[in-house]
Image (cartoon, rainbow, N blue to C red; front, side):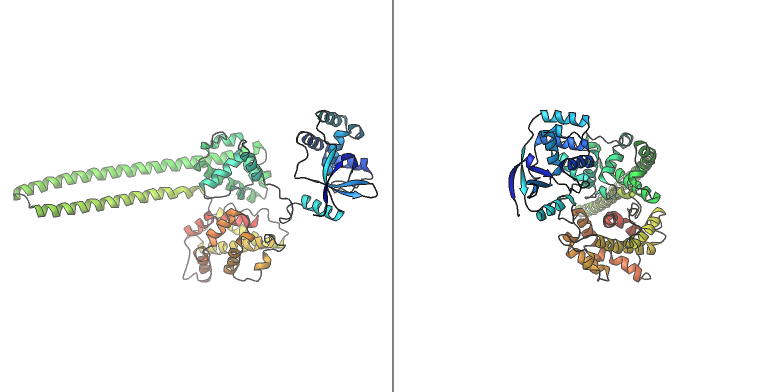
Length: 509
């Protein structure tokens, strides 16, 4: 910190002629005229009204440099704020503005509370330029100001006690029901709001923002499936989702028929399942009745034999009773096991509506002119083909090779596009000399927090690759020794659903 905080009269402050927001001004009036034209009169009035109501924000200091030539302070950071205050203090000197703008400025000024002195951080030009760069050049790998994402903005609004949006509730409940799954890896947060908050779509699904009990697991599963279908439609057509599902009518024309088919399919499956359960229940009841009748006949026969023989001794009765008890318990255990197995089977049916294999890969935004994308895009295209045509069962060796390839290509692509947290160095510099995927993954695990800043993606990475031998080595065995080892199709199809699809999308988008 080189400068000092000083209270300066607004009349002693000059707007910066060379402000990057506009062309270079020739004098103070020309500079203000160019600034208003560049920013927009309406936006400047909104800022002026906010200053009148709330004052200057305490964390946003005006940065000024004293000019010996002008005998005034030149504003390097905070030009819009100072210009807005100047307008409210001396409206008549802003004759270049239209009448409507001037009239509104007068109404704002009449409310009072306009400061004629402001606290400024006075420093030299070198530090002023550094501050301007940090404030206005974006995140800049962590050095500058990081803007909130739409989801972070919504979280802030909700935490202040305001109403929750549909997209916020969808994201929240999908994470709750599906082990932290991030739906924004499939569709952007604002796109989720625009599509699923459509009145017709929302009514068909049965969502009510004022009643969170409507955000059930089944409905969140539907939204996951619909989102992945939407992303796949956009990829297949080569058109961005925001264009393909743009206006309300476009959303309704494309999505409502899909929702009807989806919900009818679910209803048909539920009906079939209920019928099968009823049939099984009837068969069980018939078997039990037949067994009771047989036991009754056997009991009568035994009683007759016992009467004919004059009865049995106590020891015989005890032994027979023990054997009978053992058989009864054994039968009971078997029955309980069967019921448990049936319940487990019903519970595992939750995957039936999930996308097949790698449906939902988000590779449509990869730059075709970027050499780094060629390998990953080629593998993505073939994975999409395998998924759309459901070829895994027919070609498990080829499917294994593609899964192995997309893991390596996606990690390498991500490494070439992202910097190590806190360093001005690409991740690629750490792994480019590693020839084995196992070594690359080990390097990632050693530096995971500095390579992947997203908490959920780190969790997915460790769940999938924490034990290399569970998920990746079998893929290597298929490639190198297919005569001795092959993965079954079910294992391959389930792998993307365990977080691999979300992780690959994170790497390549």
